[in-house]
Image 1 (cartoon, helix red, strand yellow):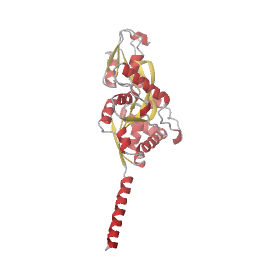
Image 2: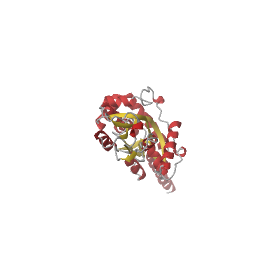
Image 3: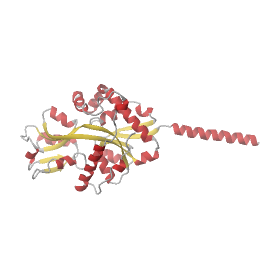
Image 4: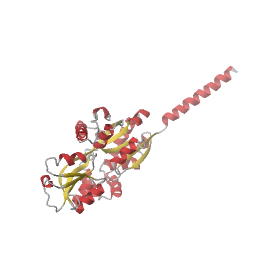
Length: 315
């Protein structure tokens, strides 16, 4: 009888160990939001993660969501609808300032440029000529700071907020506004069509953000995701024609124009996986600190967040 009891206990222990092993082997659910048509490089890497098995091969059960703007991504992250978002630096700064616990976990470098654009044929050749003119931007985004900084010494300039890139381009091309802060690929697309002229520009830098909840709930998953993220970037740069065509089909932007913008990215010509750089650079961290100070000084956010404490760089 005692042997039978021991046998049953042994079977139960083995079964429990097997269940635990299966649980450990189960793929980690990860929900990722990315801009499929709005931002160069982020779009291509997001499409790569959606259309290949890279995430599955790294132990994930991925769910990719296409979202058109940073505001929707922030809402999705805060409401626990997604675990990771791919966006630009101001959204990270705003999330931290609002008290949401998140980490900056990777950067793709620059996704083209953002710039101060005027309508072609307007006669405006330099920033100083915007005196008394109307400049559109998107408040609380990465476009907000340059709208203020670049026109700071221009008297009587009026800065207005608009909700999306389509509205700004339409208003600018129709003459309803005098200037706007645009970003690629939309900005270069307008330039190539001859509808706008760019007076000033700077790189639009990209960041991937994970909720602290996801990182804490899934030990080791962040490191696996960073590995997969690097592999997705490498797949993209090794299959440029294929991935840029995916982006062109989604964004309706000419593939040659996409290539023209994307080729300036720091990873675009890398030949080996170990050359792919997805770290958040010290200069990018400094830029986010300046963005935080700007948004705080202009009362867009109520506190200036501690950026350094929220950076979780890949090894």
